[in-house]
Image 1 (tube, rainbow, N blue to C red):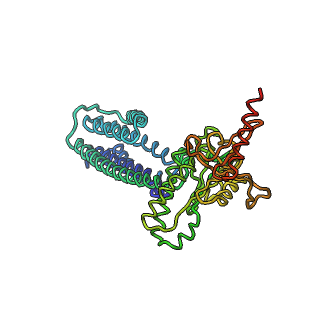
Image 2 (image 1 turned 120 degrees about the vertical axis):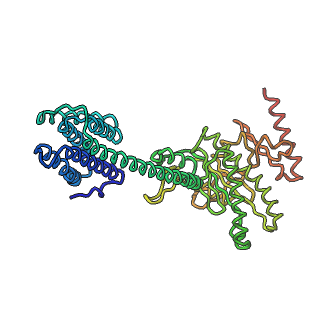
Image 3 (image 1 turned 180 degrees about the vertical axis):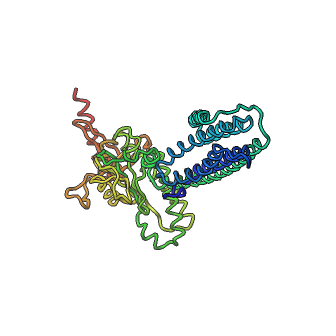
Length: 458
């Protein structure tokens, strides 16, 4: 036989409450019937009803034990209707004595409303009426509207005990619910803290997808992105010279300041690799590949400027080695999505263009921002570049055309030392820092000659 303790805790509490109610009401009914018996007149009908009430208690308990856990709700509802029908039968046998009738009917309806609401109240009310009709078939009541003291006292004691037990049980349940609610509130607060901590380790779009239960949308796809890589030159040598605590403080400060700039320009930090940073533009909040590329290069310029401030700060703290940043940027189609195993997943971008951005960062000189031809073609109207020619890059069989970022055209002003412009039939690249003094007159003469030729052509 299956025990009630094998059922879930909440369902077990409900079964236990109904079992206590059934036992109390049956004992009260048996006592009410017994108060009408005398030693000289043992009415067989009343005696049988008393025996039925007492036998019904263990029988109902065994019925629940025999039933499967999945059918406990159905069995409980049937037994509840049987309880009400049994009380209706007892009321008819008691000649509808006024006080017991009022008390038993109140107890049946109160229990139904307390544990099952309106539906159970209706079921138990119909069952009560059915029990009364059955009693009328087997017994003709005397319809006494007065009541004997012993009859009233027996039912009153049983029903008072029921209400007291119900009150204690309800108070216990309320206290338990309050305790569980407080536990849930504490766990909720703890989960909020843990969630906030966890969100710092995941990119915003991945975290938003997980929070909104959209993580299945993070599927692998091909996307045209602008990829950024940066690191600090000779950082490994610096780690050998500094204490671990000092190095950790420097690195955290650097990454914090760079992260602020990434957020300012709308990039997505893909990962930190020691002192290295990988940033993606075009996956989140994209306004087109041209806009993404310009934002990425502008971010790199802002990082280079901020690095100058950090260098002075670290110098004042006694850091002798000058830490210089180098950066690489490339634009192209990448494979973006979730990669890994069922135990560990990583949302990142992969592909040749990602590798090229990393190679450009390695090839860049200190304080230099190297970009590929694709990025240059998208940004040249807004950003000033210096043509660096072609370089050999590890992993690529052909030379790569690269450009070095000079700055934003709007910020150059009188200090502009590099000029480049391209039209159909016209191309100019002028780097004042590389023009030698003895070549200056020849350059000016060539420009004047070109201007004169353009003016003469009509």
